[in-house]
Image 1: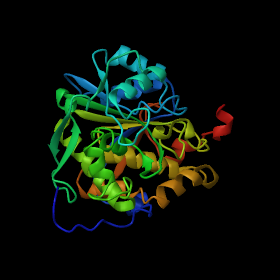
Image 2: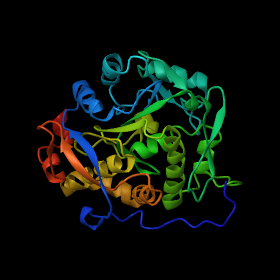
Image 3: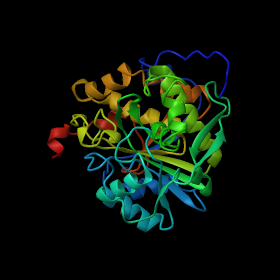
Length: 335
């Protein structure tokens, strides 16, 4: 860790409109097809750089969590596109159903993650990865087995988050690759504090983002990102059945080889919804100062917050955010 006095950034409650952003544009692919076929279709658009042994980083959820990515979608993706891949996870910092490896494996069975190998990466220990350009950390502790993979697919259920405001690819990797005892503690807890969750708002976003940077720098170009914007509770999947009811409409799936662009586009799509449809999720993002995730990723040069949104449902047409969400249905009508 760095020893110098560090001050968090500001503005995590402030949404920056697209026209106020600067810099280059990345490509973000979009489909409305929330199905196994839609997932496979969009995966093919961002998978060119994945090679060798591939780890699929996804949130497998607490027992019986209602909102996690449907197992049958992931099963089809793996069987048809990634037959030699493993799901990769780490144990939790809090004492729940995934705190120990034994508990975690039981939860995996309950939730139906039984169709492919699941590597609990900190089962056999930890490893330190450098954080290049970080201000909170010079290195981050991750599950040791992360180093056994050549490539990583971040397959993320995009939703709200109690501390992060929202959970996209950044949260999936930053918290999800950090090991359960050392790495997650580095992100969540001030050394010597009696409160394991005492780090909040901008400082938390920055620590989490630096953790993400350590992992994606390790993979270089051999990492790609998919955000599934379905069943977007304001709660994370780590809350399991206690998650708040979903009220935000389902939108679709975004994908990119740029982590900032895919998370920024996902946030932008939520903001593009009607006010009555997005108010709960937007409130969660802003009250937790979660938008600092995006500005800090940009400061760390992890990607671009400007992008071209490509509609793969309609001959790869470039579309606006408004076009992408114009036909969404209220979540209650999805049932």
